[in-house]
Image (cartoon, rainbow, N blue to C red):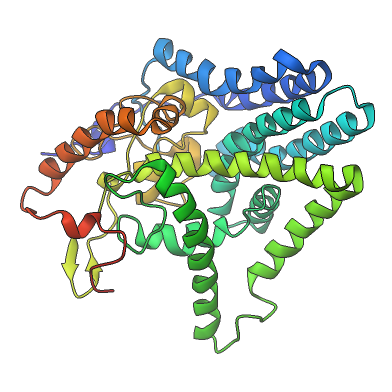
Amino acid sequence: MANSPADLKIGKLPSALPFWLSLGLVPLAVFAAIQGGWAIALLPLSTWYLFTALDYFAGLNTQNPDVETPEGELFWYRLITLLWAPIQLVTLFWIMLYVVQSGHLSRFEEWLLFAALGILSGTIGITYAHELMHQKPKLERWMADILLSSVLYAHFRSEHLLVHHRYIGTPRDPVTARYGESFYRFFPRVLYQSLVSSFKAEKAMLARKELPWFHRSNPFWRYWALEAGFILLAWGIGGWWGVFLFATQAFWAVFQLELVDYVEHYGLTRKHLGDGKYEHVLPRHSWNASQRASNWLLINLQRHSDHHYKPNRRFPLLQTYDDDEAPQLPYGYPLMTMIALVPPAWRKVMNPRVKDWRQRYYPEIRNWKPYKNATNPMPR
């Protein structure tokens, strides 16, 4: 009999303090901007590499908090996600103003610095935006739109809520990485397909209300206005060079987002039931990871199996699963995303796990070729 989260050890709500560790990146970013040179490397070292090492020593957290925890007890968890938008924007544009006016860094150092700042806006900012966009309060959704617009990827909200969560594990979901697909094929594909699918999803929603796509209620108008506002701000600070620096951090933020997207569902598919229908989304359709430290950094994003099972559940209450109900990653996201950048290493680590997953959950399926084809071979 499969074990559910309730069968795992139930623990008290974890301390909110470790989830505030992301704030430590802000003084590091300021120091890197002032010092330049070697100091710029502190940003990737303190995220991908440090938290990979911390995962090794901190181990796994398999405790599940009580999902009935009152909302009032989640104040300090919610607060960090709400504060991050103004903190990120002030940090980003203050550093831009400082380096452009001081001129103490070379152009190459400035480019490196803003590529590294993409770690703040990608690893932290987009992760927090993901949490906020799933919540009902308008303030939280606005904060999500602001954070995503600051990396020129505001349509991600529409794509994630209207496309990804609905079509996860099917050929209609651009974000589900196909078995055997390298990240370098996945990345350009998902950049294009996510933009198109998100716009079509919003257009279809308006059509059901008998409204044209250009109606003022289309959130793309808000997305475009916010993104244009940030580009104008960057131009006002540093001219076209400021726009280039802003676009640099946006690109590397999105690069990290899509690296994580690639890892989260690689090779996992929902069973096709015929007539364009698929089984309901289950924990087995996302890779689960219980590494303690990287879940601090990513506010439990690695408990992704439960997120797709219960999308509106706030991050401190997300449940983890054992391998009877959800496939397990061998390492946390920081190390898994680095492995994904080396396709032979990725295939060696993950392809046997996908094959084991298929045998464990779908032993009756003998022909997996239709599920591998990304051109939507199955009826809609």
